[in-house]
Image 1 (tube, one colour):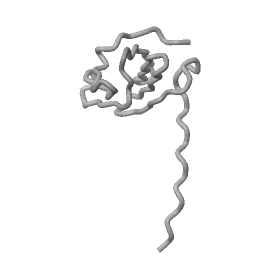
Image 2: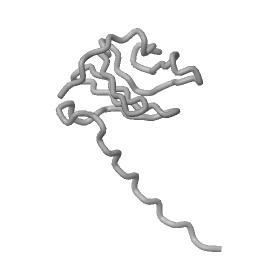
Image 3: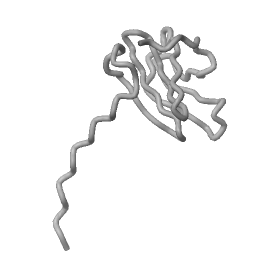
Image 4: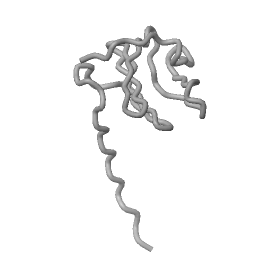
Length: 95
């Protein structure tokens, strides 16, 4: 029996968001969708199959995602409970 190997550090995720937003406080992916949340600018970016959409998160601080098999029901967890993606206002993509 071989001794356990030391764990490798996690590799940093390649940035798929505009550099102007800085570093997100929360990123994740599930079922072909990925997100990045930027609390200072109140921006939530969603990448679905290579199309990135920006949303105004308002007072919500996004910390996780819940995506059932029906992608129209995407919800996020935040400081005020669950947030339906459809309740957030779409914005133009930042440069």
